[in-house]
Amino acid sequence: MSSFDEGRSGGKDHSAADAQLERAKRRRLKLNGLQEAIAEVERLDAGGYRQAGSWGLAGNLSHLNKSLNLCFEPFPFITPAPIRPIMRAVMVPLMKRCVQFPAGFKAPPPLQPAEDLELAAEIAEFKRLVGAVLNPDSQLQPNHPLLGKFNREQWIIMQTWHAAHHLSFLVPK
View 1 (tube, one colour):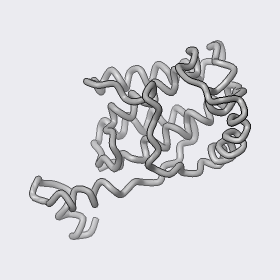
View 2 (cartoon, helix red, strand yellow; view 1 turned 180 degrees about the horizontal axis):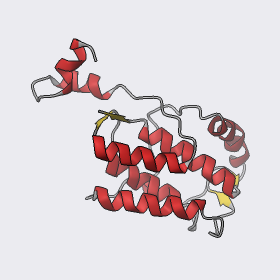
View 3 (cartoon, one colour; view 1 turned 90 degrees about the vertical axis):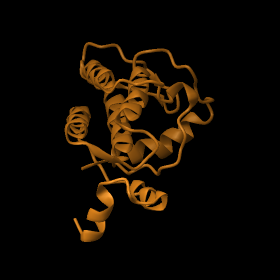
């Protein structure tokens, strides 16, 4: 770390502009599966992180947990049928290549983080849901609300990519 960085990393003396600069640096993160997502969550929880986006670890996990639930539960929304093949043609290759999704897209209201989150509960729920998605005996929804027909492998690729996207906004200390 440079002396420039050291002066910004601690204390409450720096200006709002300095804080914004500090928050603006997102990391590149590639996960090779949902088990790696769990390990990354544990690392962030144990070692702390710098928040480069709108949500902290609990907020990101709340959102990811709601997304993971889409693998099992009826969807609170669905994209019109004519749009799904277009979205699939664009998104699936990006997910398979682990291309980092740009920041700035707002999650639909049903997938927004809950209020008054407890980090330990969000971590436990994330681990439970990941285990359920990876369990070959679990029944997954046959369709993604935005991308159409999905099998287990596609759900895992999408959820891994989604986790990497959100955890990239939390930079380990």
